[in-house]
Image (tube, rainbow, N blue to C red; front, top):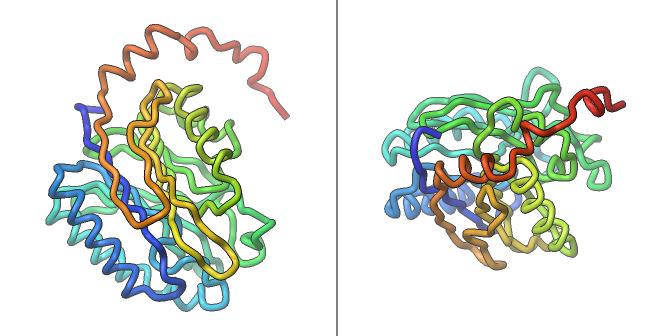
Length: 263
């Protein structure tokens, strides 16, 4: 991180398949966090459409125009925005987190771990690479929802220099305690900041609980949402991350000679 940053979350109830309504809601939230001097904003997983599997291929055709609109808005507001959208590449569909940095696409990440219990693997292709993306505010590691349950991914990103993990999600009830515990664990064990944006409200048979979080490199929850539409704001202080890594030198003391060849 080049300096302390003000991080934010835009949490909202995604209207299934209704791109225009979701854009209006998300963009209004981004404008509000910008008035609070936010540098970074994270949106939920599949924030433009929700998991509308039946129409996802058709809806994904609108993603390029959404990104153009998002580029214009971030340039106007001076924001770095992260959120996942359906991406169509040839005959394949991906759940892709895009990073838009002050009017420019800085990079993207395609979800690695597809949640078979919700049929993701039947409709979507899995990504093949983790990524850490340099931006104007620092190095962002990207993960999406179910990825949270795979600690190896987060350690890999930390070793590659990630300073902030941005995690868009659609994480439903009754798994609230898993969400809260795993997010804090990823921050603590990797000594980095976490900005996790969940959605809220009901989509079909699923009830999403919100509870988006901004978490310090010490694992402290700096801001947490409820079950309704909301925006969160918190300061990520670079000196604190440096201090924690000095006090508890996990990266220096790790025994990669023992576990670097995990199966």
